[in-house]
Every structure is written in C-alpha cells, then in structure tokens.
Amino acid sequence: MAGSETIINILGIISTAAIIALAVMNASKLKKIQDLQKAVDNLNESLNEMDEQAKMVVRTDMELNKTQEELDKKIIGLYALQRLSRAISTTLEENQIFNMLNSTYIIEDLGFEKYFIFLWSEIDKKFKLSLNIGYAKDESKAIEILINNNKDDYLKLIASQETISSVQNKSADNFKVHSFVITGLYPKEGAKGFLFAGTENKDIVITEGDQELITILANQLAQALENARLFEKTWGAQQELERRVEKRTRELSLALEEVKKISRRKSDFVSSVTHELRTPLTSIKGYASILLTEKLGALPPEVKARLEKMNRHSDELAQMVNDLLDISRIESGKVTMKLETQSLKTIVQEASELLMVQLKDKQISLTVNIASGIDNILADLSQIKRVFINIIGNAIKFTPEQGKIIICAQDKGENIQIDVTDTGCGIPENARELIFEEFYRAENAVNEGIKGTGLGLALVKNIIEAHSGKIWVTSLISSGSTFSFTLPKGK
Ligand code: ADP
Image (cartoon, rainbow, N blue to C red; front, side):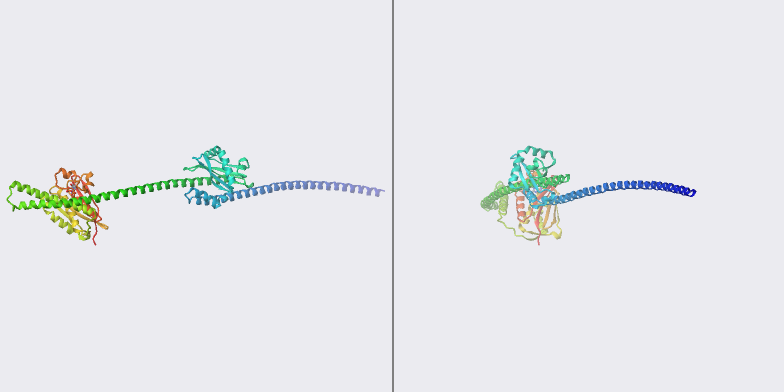
C-alpha cells in the first residue's frame, strides 16, 4: 500500500511538474507570439512608408517628364523664333514680312496652328487683316467683322501693352480655337495692331512660356514693321529728292544752253563790232602817222602834240579791240590752241625781257624758281607768253618801287602749278573773283589812276582754260598778291 501511495505521489509530483513546465512553455510561446506581432506591425509600417515613397517617386518622375516636355517645347519655340527673326529681318517691305511668316511654316513650331494680325487703319478707323494663317476666307471675314464690332476693346488691349491668354471661353469659340494668346504690336512708326495665336488642340495648356514666346514674336514683328516703314519713308524721300534733282538739272541745263546761246551771240557781236572798228581805226592811225611825218606840211607844235596823243590813243584802242577780239574768239572756240612741249623757264625769261624796262624803271627785283625737273609744259607758245606778259605786267603795275616779284613752279601730278607773287597793293576780297571778268577793275587800280582796260585777266583766264588749266588769286591788302595757275605737263 505504501508503495502505491508513493507511486501516486510521484505521479502527482510529475503531473504538477508537467503542468508547471507546460505553463512555463506557454508563457514563453506567448511572449514569442507577441514579439512576432510587433515585428509584423513594424514591417507593415515600413511597407506603408515605402509605398508612400514609391508614390512620391512616381509623382516626381511625372512632374519631371512634364517639365522636360515644356522645356523641349520652349527650346523648339525659341529656335523657331530665332529662325523667324532672321527671316523677317532680311526684308524691308511690309507685305513681304507677312508673306514670309505665311510661307515659312516655322511659325507653327511655336505650338499654335492658327494666327492672325490686324493693323489699325487711321484713315478708315478700323482694323484690317494683314496676316491669316489657318483660317478659311469666310472665317477670317467673320473674325474681321467681329473685331471691328468690338474695336474699342482691341484698341484698349493695344494701349495696355499686355499679353493675355484664354482657354475655352466665348472669345475662343468666336475664333474657332480651344485656347489662344493675344498681344499688341506697337511699332514706333506707322500703324499699331495685334497678333493672335490660337490652337484647337484641347491637350495644350497655355503656359507662361507660350505667352512669352508670342510676346517676343510680336516685338520682333513690330521692329521689322518699324524698319520697313522707316525704309519706305527714306526711300520715298530719296526718290523725291532724285526727282527734284533731275528736274533742277533739266532746268539748269536748259538755262546753261540759253546762257551758251547768249554768250555765243555776245561773242559774235563783239567779234563783228571789233572787226568793224579795226578798219576805221587803222585809217585814223594811218592818217595821224602820215601827218606826223610832216610830209604833207609842217605842223604847229600844238597840232603835233594833239596828233601824237591821237596816235597813242589809237594804239591803245587798237590793243583793246585786239584783246576783245581774241577773248571772243577763244570763248567761241574759234581759236584752237597748238599744244606743244615748251620750256617754262624760256617762256618766263622771254616775257621778263620784254618787261625789263618797266622792271628797271620801278627797281623791282624778279626772282624765278623753277626746278629743271618741272620745266616742261604743254602749251601754245604765243598764247602762254601773253599770259605771262599780262600777269608779270600787272605785278609790275600794282607793285610800288623797289618791290619784289617771285615766280615759282610746283609739281602737281599731271599739271604744273605756277605762282606769281608780288609785294604790291593787294586785291580787296570782294574783287578777287570779279577781276577775271571783262572790263572789271578793282578799286585799287581805279583809285590810284593806274592805266588799264580790265581785259588782261579775262584774256588770261580764257587762254588758261583753253589749256584745261585753272587760275585763281590769293591776296593780302597792302602786302601783295599771288596769281596761281595750272598748265598740263609737257612730254
Ligand atoms: P587792267 O590791268 O588793265 O586793269 P586786268 O584784267 O589785267 O586789267 O586786271 C583787272 C584788275 O585786277 C586790275 O584793274 C586790278 O584792279 C587787279 N589786279 C590785277 N593784277 C593785280 C596785282 N598784281 N595786284 C593788284 N591788283 C591787281
């Protein structure tokens, strides 16, 4: 019995131990389950976070794609603008600018397929269509009517200098588009207006970038229109000027013809009068000379003195008549210059020898500076000698005693320039041109009672011009004058 009790006790102990062990095991399992649950919760949380992050990545990616698309659009637009700008800046005609926009198709790269431009006509007080891309004729006619019915709104829009855009609204419907941009054109010269760009594409959302592109295009167009108008103005002014110059030239050549005719008539008249004068003059002089020989009888001293005066005066008159005749003959081209190579030094020497008496009388020194390299001139010997005799003769006449005369020559390319300088009374400024005209004598000569006819320089000028030369004078009152003239170089 005792044995069975012991067994029972042992069993009891064992079962208690087992129960305890079980309980302990359960407790640890529970703990494990709790830990697992926690881990699962943590995992769930991480999963949610990852999900959120993934969504964010997708969103960012989409946005990036959109930005990239917009960037691409903008680059295409800017590139198109650059090409358009280059194209329209090459033309200076308003119509051609619009034709170019219409024909190049570049404009479509700006993201719109419909465009129009209206310009305000100050004369008709209404907007006129200048560009139409993408609209049929009747559609553009309807739009023109619509715009002119609301012209004040458009004039206000131009004045506001704003760019506006619009998505599907009444106006967009009127213009048969889904969205559009509209902006003013304000060239500094000529008519103002506005540019419209629209699209029927419902997927296109007009961005600030689109507005910017259209505004830049409008500015470029305004600049091109301004240039075209300025060019038109300048061109018009130039044409007008050319027309007036042409008219004036015609009038002047008619007047010149008339002057030439009168001058020819004058030369003919002088020529025939002087010719007629020579015959009686010769007989007067002849009779006076015969009488002076006293072969026809002795003359009382008073008669002789008067006859000598008559003789001298008829010499002077004959000289004057000859000069006049020469001037008129050279002027009318009846005298041709026999151009041959001559030595300048020799001509000057011969002329001064002829004037030696006058030079000595007034004790005037004459210096000649002609380098041997420029000694040759192409001239008619007898005519050029007259030139030197006249100019040196004048220099002696108008220079006080013990004065100086210097003759120099300079190389002037195809010509030789000769300067005859004196230390005489000088010539008043207002007379410097006139002394080359027939019978003109400056006050200095008249006042000082110096003899002369006023024909010498007119003859000189005619001879020099017949040699294709020029003559002019520089002078300083009371200091002297320099007569300069050019002659062609000899061979
Ligand atoms: P003339 O000597 O017979 O008066 P010219 O035609 O030779 O006619 O000259 C015209 C005028 O030019 C002269 O009257 C004189 O007033 C002026 N003149 C010409 N040469 C000189 C000179 N060397 N110095 C000052 N005046 C001169």
